[in-house]
Each structure stands twice: as structure tokens, then as C-alpha cells.
Image 1 (spheres, helix red, strand yellow):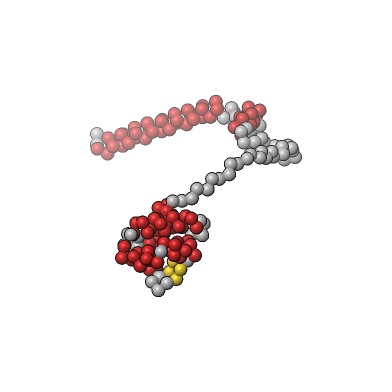
Image 2 (tube, one colour; image 1 turned 60 degrees about the vertical axis):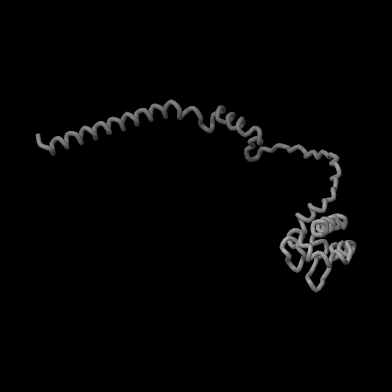
Amino acid sequence: MSRDQKFFDMYSLVIGVLVVAAIGIYILAAQMSESTQEVYTRETAEYQAAIVERIAPVGQVYLPGEEQQANAPVVEATAEPEPVATAMTGPQVYNTACLACHATGVGGAPIVGDTAQWTDRIAQGVDVLKQHAVEGFTGSAGYMPAKGGRMDLSDDEVANAVDYMVGESS
């Protein structure tokens, strides 16, 4: 037998096996579809009940022309407790509002901890520093916006921050 004949025989055998396998899969799929296709159709009561059960937590199905009266919404009034406003401490105010300028010296702001920059300012008096911090100040060395630009801070919170910065810098 020639090599070509052996190749042709083997090739024919493989193709034959693949064709038989494909026909078997087709017959199996046809049998499965016959036994399962008629189980659910949109018109059957079982299919409609399955849909209603699936969407029951969300709502109900109404066909055009059917109406369902909606219940009036009920608003329950609950008394909410008054929010308790707690004043921030000096370090908290410094870390949230003052740190941006007083840690780097932006706009001529004295750096916290640098006693040389704070000596002349502290000599004016802590009350003057608190007034400048609350009301704002423009001097030859720089600019201090009122309350550091944080108008939501109380005067006492700003004063606490000034006390903290003076304490850290003297």
C-alpha cells in the first residue's frame, strides 16, 4: 500500500468519526429540545405565575387598560435630636485650617516652631494676635485672612489655634 493510500484511509476514518459524532450531538440536542421546549411558553399560566413571583417584591404586572390605585404615601415625622456642636481644640483647628500656611510660610505666615519669626509677633501681645487672626490683617511681612479663610470657625476656635501656635513657637 502506498503512503498516499494510508493517508487517505486515515483521513477518511477521522472525517467519518467526526461526522458520526456531529450527528450524535445533533440527535441529542433535538431530543433535549423536544422534552424542554414546551415547558415554558409565554401564554401558559405557569410561566405567568413564575414572572409574578419573580417581580413580586418590586411590583405587579398590569396590562394596558388595567389600573391599580396607589396608596397615598405616609410620611412619618420623627424627632431628630439636635446636633451637638463641639468646638474644635487648638491643635484640631491648626491641622485643618492653619497648617497650610503656617507650616510652610506661605504669604509671609510665621512658621510654627520658628521662635525667631514669632518673637516680634508675641511681643505685641496674644490678644493682638487673636484679633488679627479673627479679623484678618495685612502687614509689611504678609497677609492673614480673617479666620484663616475658614469663616465656619468660631472666634473661640481661632483663639484656641492662636494659643496653640504661640505655645509651640515660644
